[in-house]
Length: 391
Image 1 (cartoon, one colour):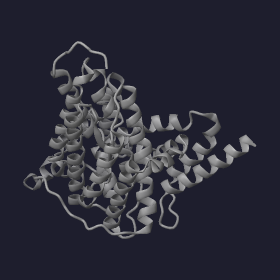
Image 2 (cartoon, rainbow, N blue to C red):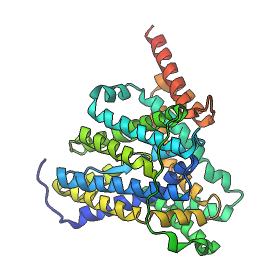
Image 3 (cartoon, one colour):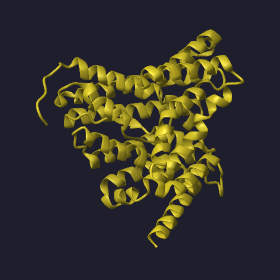
């Protein structure tokens, strides 16, 4: 890399703090919604939030110190969104935990076995993006469906998000979180929080195995984490001039996912959006110092994780639908990006459109949710239409 005039350590440290604040506040509500949807109770969800924050935070710190590169990890927000539109699998929360373990094993094997990584890359980008867009659509509709019933509370969240989006999109979701906290203060919700019970704690769940959970949860979770997080994250880092230790990163994230699953964590992965914040020019003019941003981000994630029980307690005390609205607006940008990518090329537009509709339908067949069936239908239709065009 070429030499750049140094602007000190303050800039990368500040960038790392921004990355941690934006990364956590913009998606913790989605993670909680996903875990609760597949059977986690309050203690399980708090434990999951804690173990995810710790594993991704310690991963950021470790890679920063060992590689001197701004490699950042994050929880799988698309994966959490996928869980949020599922129903509790047969076997309940322990079966979901078993699916998380298998997801981690699959991520680890992807790092160890290049043919598996190449197989994932064979899934048409338009189909994978359309599946994600369909999953996100139902969540993004929530705030607007709730708005007529709770115009002041939900309106404050949506209005704050819209206003700050016009000024600085990065801070739009944190602003929506602040608006939700203000609504809670006005509503008197803080009085219902048992602050004495908010110390950090982990809750163990022994994994159970269910083929429905494997097909409905583990496979889509693995695919959406790879195609929407890991692959774009690698591309982002390379575009900024950094070689990512891909096998090591996938090995760590997969192993950490598998080991963290019994404590409630669904999946961690290479960052996509956070990668640009910590590895780009905003982290300093000198690329050789930007690893400090990743280090600071990791420490920030650990600190946020230690507040997981308090976060879950606050979400539980909030007026009904308030944090579901936060999750909905938080995913609007991801929905727009996924939809744009899905429909970008006319040749694959029909297959992508059908995939999106099936994923958004919420249909369940044989105990298996719509995300899996969307992939099956989309890949089949894409293959048939591609063969027809070649013929």
